Image (tube, rainbow, N blue to C red; front, side, top):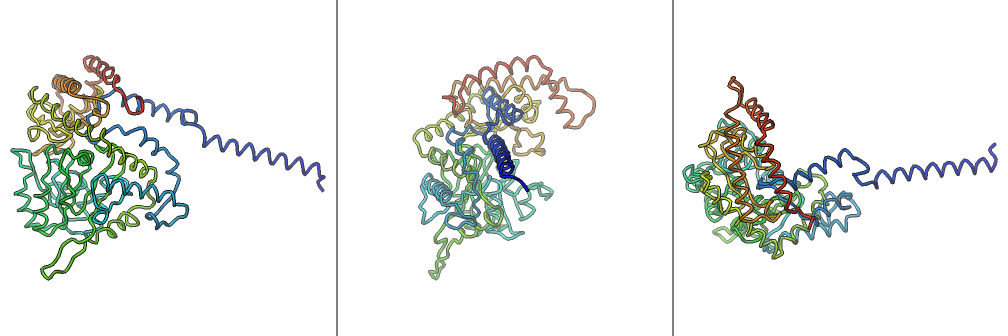
Length: 490
């Protein structure tokens, strides 16, 4: 039998062990990443350096604010909250409800929407899933959808499939999709042809939205065409939601039944998405019977529990912050400058002899047509990357390959955030011109042996890495770009 001293000694040892374990456990969850995971911290520092010392021209990218980043890394992410404000499947969500409700209210306020006529779901994790959630809410499997063809400036999530009928996006596997097109002569959406196609195809949904279209969208014409064939008009304003908020491009809300958007592009928020939907009366029959929209329950159910579980509360909180920022005069000035810079950038490229799809731009992006040059978009993207300039290859009307297209897509939102104006974008145009000329020279040095397209591109990459001209210009651009602040530095 143990003595009292032995029992006390054992108890003290146990307490000490528990204390040590508790201390170690607390240390594990309290260390900053620089101490706890130096390898990952180093990767983060590399990415921070890349972003500061490079020129970001991808129009779907931006530099979000310090306040948004604060919420993204906040304790809001610790809470699980399946359901909606006031209707959760977990306890302890009273404060999370406040965050999501505030985000919804700000979203409606930002776009001037009457809460009795419009609702919004802020839980979708990203833009493409948000579009799927809408289709699933209002269409049955096999029903019909129309969206702008991908080579003409559309998006995968608008139902892209090959001309052979092979689905690329699974959306075109779940639903029957038919593309509409731009007029290849003008680069503008061919509304007359869309009207003819819609009348024959009778889609359930027509999508007015783009990912590489530099002109304004005629939402009134889209509404006219949609009504004539009995389709819902869904506008995807993912690229231009910041511009719409600042009233520097036309708003889709007056004419649309549903509007979707991401929140991280021109809106400059976190990586999330929103679905806006009409409420109230959709139409009135000849006999005076009111037909309600009935979209709210269908869309909310499609998001949860139809496709998602618990929402990302840290993202929703960050979205709320971004939406408040978007109501400020400074944000409106920023959006106007995005468009002004884009138009100036396009003019500079035109002066240098570059052909632009549609001839120019009315928004935040430009698509350069490289079809008359010896190089394609893939090679120009590759050499630009080696020069510390991020842009992306892009299909243009008439292209047959998305991997080796004739276009290069560039935009102004990210570098406008960092303080670029006309003078800086004139310099960037010169850098692009230098890159294209370098690419032409390096392409001429590619091996003459018969190689497939991917292998030839790999050979081109090797030539870029070995070029002293590329190395010298890369250093110049890195030093120049590094002079401009990123959010949080000022």
